[in-house]
Length: 257
Image 1 (cartoon, rainbow, N blue to C red):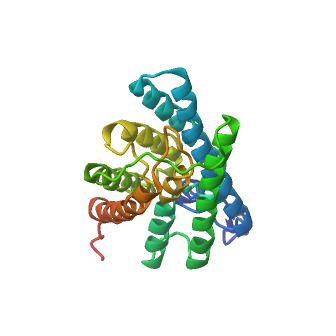
Image 2: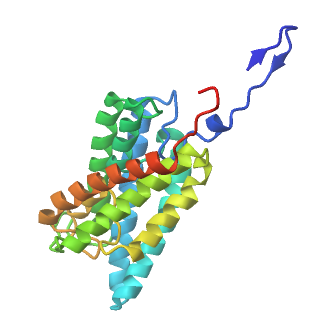
Image 3: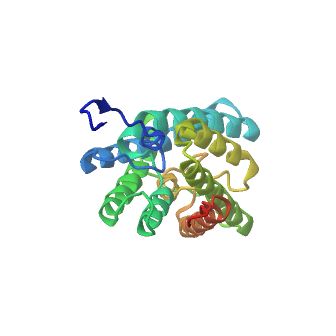
């Protein structure tokens, strides 16, 4: 709010400010401890949804397609709710690849997390992911920690992770560039649901979630030996996504420069 020369207040309504507090756009003035807690809880809940729905589906049917359908459907609804709920607190990253991409854009003059926030967000997300996997195992009577034996080291799966992560980063930062982050809960959840099916890797697209899923030897697990390559491809995918954002959403100059 500001004032006219005559002393009457006028209200400044900024669309971009109203669109903040959603995924990929960290809200201002929220205490860092609260943001770290939101990232921990949100990532833990996300992994619990992914792993828990996978266990439930395995117990209910032997049809692998139905298992994947149940797993992806639960993830879509759960992720959308988590983004809508926790976006106003932390930006609802739940993903080190998103946090790293935001930090990179902030270094180059854009809005985003600083180095201190990056150092808090990523451990919170990673520990939260592990906690979520342990929680899901506990709810279904599985061993709390049992390393996954689900090998995912094939080259086509690694390519799938590059594609899945690049698409996710393009979506999030494309929405930010066009002031449409209010659509993030639906758009991001829908993209992840689709990527379950159109990528060979079933779209982990998240280093923290990948690490967490190594702790459970269930439908959604990934063998620890497969984790480093998956995470590496996700980081590459994030870089590709940012490059695509820079090319596709280039802001034009005015005649005055």
